[in-house]
Length: 71
Image (tube, rainbow, N blue to C red; front, side, top):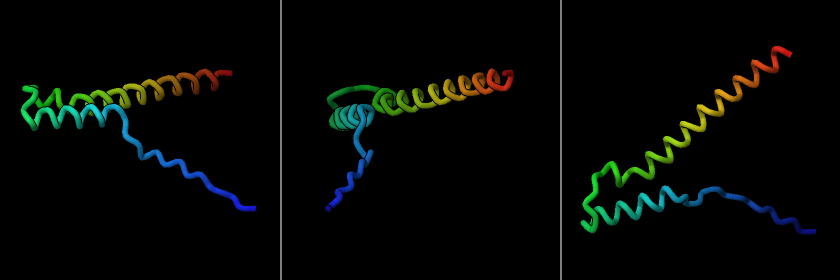
Protein backbone atom coordinates (compact mmCIF):
# COMPACT_ATOMS: atom_id res chain seq x y z
CA UNK A 1 0.00 0.00 0.00
CA UNK A 2 1.33 3.45 -0.93
CA UNK A 3 0.99 6.21 1.63
CA UNK A 4 1.00 9.82 0.63
CA UNK A 5 2.11 12.37 3.15
CA UNK A 6 0.41 15.70 3.08
CA UNK A 7 2.73 18.50 4.07
CA UNK A 8 0.84 21.55 5.20
CA UNK A 9 3.21 24.43 4.60
CA UNK A 10 1.99 27.66 6.18
CA UNK A 11 4.16 29.91 4.04
CA UNK A 12 1.12 31.67 2.63
CA UNK A 13 0.45 35.35 2.17
CA UNK A 14 -1.79 37.17 4.62
CA UNK A 15 -3.95 40.23 4.08
CA UNK A 16 -1.49 42.57 5.80
CA UNK A 17 1.27 41.57 3.39
CA UNK A 18 -0.98 42.06 0.38
CA UNK A 19 -2.15 45.47 1.59
CA UNK A 20 1.41 46.54 2.33
CA UNK A 21 2.57 45.53 -1.15
CA UNK A 22 -0.34 47.35 -2.77
CA UNK A 23 0.32 50.50 -0.72
CA UNK A 24 4.05 50.28 -1.44
CA UNK A 25 3.54 50.03 -5.19
CA UNK A 26 1.05 52.90 -5.15
CA UNK A 27 3.45 55.06 -3.11
CA UNK A 28 6.48 54.28 -5.29
CA UNK A 29 4.53 55.03 -8.47
CA UNK A 30 3.29 58.33 -6.96
CA UNK A 31 -0.35 57.36 -7.31
CA UNK A 32 -0.92 58.12 -3.63
CA UNK A 33 0.60 60.89 -1.57
CA UNK A 34 0.51 59.16 1.80
CA UNK A 35 2.98 59.28 4.61
CA UNK A 36 5.26 56.26 4.91
CA UNK A 37 3.56 55.56 8.26
CA UNK A 38 0.32 54.84 6.39
CA UNK A 39 2.10 52.72 3.79
CA UNK A 40 3.56 50.53 6.54
CA UNK A 41 0.37 50.60 8.63
CA UNK A 42 -0.79 47.06 7.72
CA UNK A 43 2.45 45.69 9.15
CA UNK A 44 2.27 47.86 12.28
CA UNK A 45 -1.39 47.02 12.86
CA UNK A 46 -0.88 43.26 12.50
CA UNK A 47 2.19 43.39 14.77
CA UNK A 48 0.21 45.40 17.33
CA UNK A 49 -2.64 42.88 17.21
CA UNK A 50 -0.21 40.01 17.82
CA UNK A 51 1.31 41.83 20.80
CA UNK A 52 -2.12 42.79 22.17
CA UNK A 53 -3.53 39.27 21.96
CA UNK A 54 -0.27 37.81 23.26
CA UNK A 55 -0.46 39.96 26.38
CA UNK A 56 -4.15 39.13 26.72
CA UNK A 57 -3.38 35.43 26.55
CA UNK A 58 -0.60 35.83 29.14
CA UNK A 59 -2.88 37.71 31.55
CA UNK A 60 -5.78 35.27 31.18
CA UNK A 61 -3.53 32.23 31.59
CA UNK A 62 -1.95 33.81 34.70
CA UNK A 63 -5.37 34.38 36.23
CA UNK A 64 -6.45 30.82 35.45
CA UNK A 65 -3.26 29.42 37.03
CA UNK A 66 -3.88 31.46 40.20
CA UNK A 67 -7.47 30.24 40.38
CA UNK A 68 -6.41 26.63 39.92
CA UNK A 69 -3.78 26.94 42.68
CA UNK A 70 -6.43 28.04 45.17
CA UNK A 71 -8.47 24.88 44.64
